[in-house]
Image (cartoon, rainbow, N blue to C red):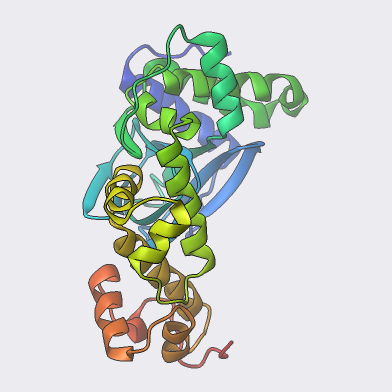
Length: 303
């Protein structure tokens, strides 16, 4: 077995060489490969235009390349050796800024599940981490990168996966709980009733995306006063309820447009009544008019 180097740069070099062994060529489009249940390797050899989606709680550790992430009004940059954690279902707009055939963008995504984290906190930590924001960005520890290395060895020894896979994943979660992202991760397991009430509203907003829902109705769904709902919603998500709803709508419309749906139809389906307003907000969010978005084809069949 290769002896890991001690420095951060050395660890990243070892990880890159190992990824080359299991995936010699990176695809031009963003692709994922499951390493074990709940852990994926994300790769691409070309910078990507704006990517938008709602991400369930997860940790992303960048091994090579770089990315920008926009959450509400916050713009985050992360480079090799950086770890991003999102603790609640967040609408995230991201862009891979550095990737090439010689040095593809590569990252490990780890799903963060409430039950696994709660058990681990009870078992291995003498006290729960302090509550943090709904997301966190910071350096990955050498111990976390070493666990990533052992994880990425598993495709070369598939007979080890059933036994070693869950053990290594548990170690990765433990290292995350010991790192600067612990506060954000702790939000996943919080029993704070206010956070749980906000989560209930998040689900309701997603299920009623096409409706024009006033704040009063959102607050009622959460079982809170409007002022309390606004305050706790921003704490949980980093944005206002209306920002959250608008971001979800625009992301859903963009996915439909890039899949071939007519622009006006896509806008109407997510609740926009004014095409001009939709076009303005789409351009402001994604930096391009909907009809000029890369990947959109006027000849694509409408759906």
